[in-house]
Image (tube, rainbow, N blue to C red; front, side, top):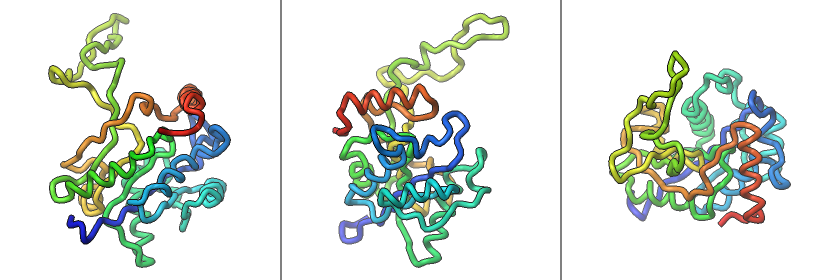
Length: 237
């Protein structure tokens, strides 16, 4: 894409009201503000992002999101907020809703509220990478190196309770296994519509730092992230 026409980025935060493993996690206080607010503030601080929208099925989550500066122009239908619902389906619903009001975007940057450990330049860096390689790629996904559980040393317990090698392809010599943490998934809208996925065929990885390799899925994750933020004194690098 030429410098004369930079892509319009929609930052989208999907925040359901329900959570089985950690109830109410999206609005649970993390160092004095709701978990959801960390993602909202990161999106609002990124110059490349045109709008920050929260998609939720919960009025309570919507009220919290608005109080921290996000747009919540709709409540997500229950059918798109079930355990079986996909992020791509929810994103396409948001894009279609906004398009009805004349708001069109070239790219969506999904910010998972469960990944609040974003360095200050991450979102701008992801947007810049997708913009510069617009004609070559379809998406950019943030990834962190797997430091402990590398596939070539992982084990499984077989039917007799014995440890056996994990059946998986080991990384090529000199490379490392990577995990896609939810700091940002940026995808061209055209590719999202064509594939209904945040992983279209041509995806670049955006490397994260070690301290960012955490997501809030349960209580232990929350405690770990809170400890990291406390160590950083609440100020992300």
